[in-house]
Length: 177
Ligand code: S3P
Image 1 (tube, helix red, strand yellow):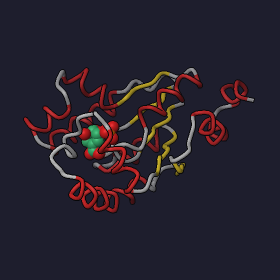
Image 2: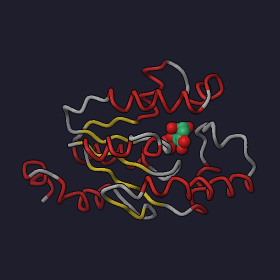
Image 3: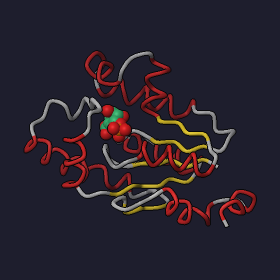
Image 4: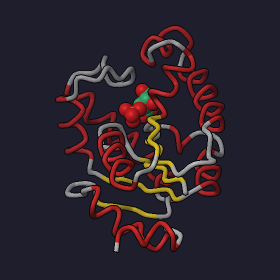
């Protein structure tokens, strides 16, 4: 079974994904880290050198290179579901989970975060707020195609396991009863 975590930058996909994979005894892949290890370049450097469209095309290719033969949690990049037919692809391959957070909380987290995010780093707080709201509005129609939409404010791995339970095959779900 493949679980794709989707949502805006800063919603907690990587942190929760790692915990979830640990609790389920699934493998974990962070698509951003997969990108860095395959392309041998940091994402912000890739953006600067080649631009966003090239990034999306490479991300598209790498999403399809992930080995789906094993139980897996994938933390996607914030823009992954919004490019081409990536969302349809993920829906076909597994269960898609949208970690939803409001723009104010996302901004707070992005300001606090030490991760270098190319689209964020050049903005002051006010610009960031406007930009996040605008981008969320554009991306929501893609995120909303997820099988599950979860309020990410108080989500824990244990709670997510419960919510996901109907999607597990019998053999997997038995471990969590
Ligand atoms: C992006 C989000 C980033 C990364 C890239 C672009 C986006 O991933 O893929 O910087 O367009 O939202 P995270 O959501 O893991 O920060």
